[in-house]
Length: 465
Ligand SMILES: C[S@@+](CC[C@H](N)C(=O)[O-])C[C@H]1O[C@@H](n2cnc3c(N)ncnc32)[C@H](O)[C@@H]1O
Image (cartoon, rainbow, N blue to C red; front, side, top):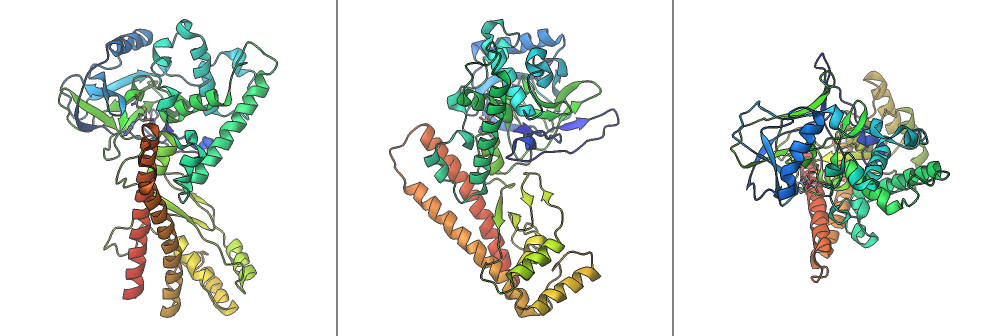
């Protein structure tokens, strides 16, 4: 990822910028949000060597980083626990910028070889590889040695083709391929840059580069100077239900986390990485949460090619095309691609189903040039957007929504089939395969829940119109 964080300036102005999800730029988000919560899991044990990590980092920083937290292990890997009773509003940790790893830590002789085509995530990945190569001579050795093993990375970019087939109906499938392509491009740009310099990254493989890339997307936060790995803070695990923030204070040049509730000594402290769907969590971090309230489904609709008004409809949409809109998960609603979120039952307005999607269906189901003209006239009288109001002809309004129900039903069928296959698939798999099957299952069942909620709302809309 880049984890989301709130950047505070001297005026305490939080900026909210986030590049594209599932394309690498998206990772340079600036709006980061953290939240802390209590897990019922108490600190199991603190690995012997982990005791030395915080003193090492504090010595390096020349400042105290945390007296409130200690390192332990949970089922999520390394984790942070309350070292004492903590009150809401207490500062949990404060990590100075001077001990964070960002692109400006890259040695100048490496930086000067890299062109603009090599993105920030790739540069931080190179920094990690560079430090790794130095082994114990690296001044970051205690941090680098605590990064996960490649086998512990479960982002879909590391899934085999067969594993990826499990998530075929989800937009994450395409997002994963796009991300892999981007990593490949970054890798080749890096290789080209270092071609003449056998001292640097001569033995770099695409696989090694992709792993380093995965470390960055799953453990770096967006800051004004780009992606930053924040040692110690990156031992915090995610809980989407909590709601306090990690602040990156540009003035004081540190990142901090404030407790949003009380913790008893020994409680596991979890933060919210962002309001991320399972698709985002899986691509960026390699995990999912069950019943994720931020889940969403991207659906793409097209005007049937055999539609007698195909060209007229396309032209009409093009004339009224609005700028694409990105949401928090970086899903973009373009002219024919829309993100649906879970619609609460009983919701009157169908919040979760974009108005632009319903408008698209009203246009697609028009049967004559006159009907299209009427929509254009209405748009000119209002704010210029097409088909935002319910059609006056009730039957046509129902027809438009029935078209959408039918598209969603096809998806529901596709998802259900895939889930059924997944459940009945080879019972002999173990370890990594079982874990990835569960991740795929969480993803698809979450997206299926969203689709079904939208379908139920639309059915109700049609029957009560
Ligand atoms: C920023 S690191 C957190 C520290 C990490 N557990 C470690 O061992 O260093 C993010 C990674 O922790 C794990 N993680 C965090 N929250 C999780 C959760 N709610 N469920 C499962 N894994 C989680 C995932 O492997 C994720 O890529």
